[in-house]
Amino acid sequence: MASADLLLHPVRLRIVQAFLGDRALTTTQLAEELDDVPSGSLYRHVALLTKAGVLQVVAERRVRAVVERTYTLRLLAAQVGPAEAAAMTPEDHSRAFMVFVAGLVADFDRYLAVGPPNFVRDGVSYGMSAMWLSDGEYTDFLRELQAMVMPRLANAPGKRRRRRIVSSVFLPAPEKLARGGAKPSGLTRPQHLTRARS
Image 1 (cartoon, rainbow, N blue to C red):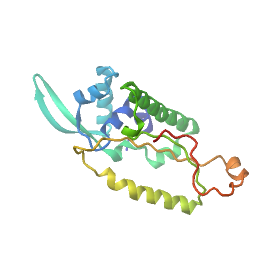
Image 2 (tube, rainbow, N blue to C red; image 1 turned 30 degrees about the horizontal axis):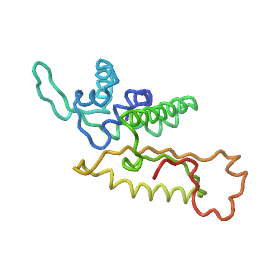
Image 3 (tube, rainbow, N blue to C red; image 1 turned 90 degrees about the vertical axis):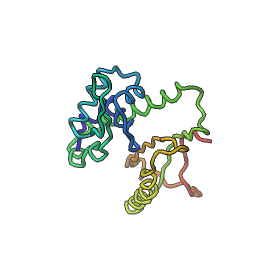
Image 4 (cartoon, one colour; image 1 turned 135 degrees about the horizontal axis):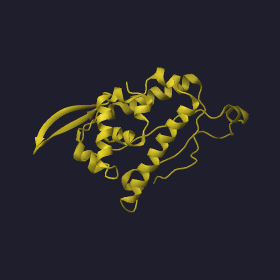
């Protein structure tokens, strides 16, 4: 299991993300995807992740005078463990969340930089909803969500498939606000505050 300090770095987080979806990449392929990261810096971060067991070498081949390595992600090693997460201070969590959010913003900026966005064609959306759930109902919701997502995580790359990044944030509403107001009558489903979707 990797440490928070190792994983929660903007460049290393992008490297880990590049390997999501059971991808096998050489450093050359990785450098093409992360073309804004200087190659020396990229190689250092790959070496750190490999030493920590987050990345593993699955193939080697000689290309002229150098050995080209192909890497894959060890997903279980690319997570902060529950014990370390519990030991993190509020400041640690705030810093980690800022790195996560900054990564999302940068990814979205890179998506927009490719050309005029087409959210309908690309299936891009972002939104926020509120649900009133007991602890038991919330546990059921997470279980049902996992049951829906897990089989799709096993999909192999295919001719008609496009790799899609799904990010999630689940937060309880602040206690004073959550308990302070009554649920409006007639509200039968979550109300979206922001949505960019067809």
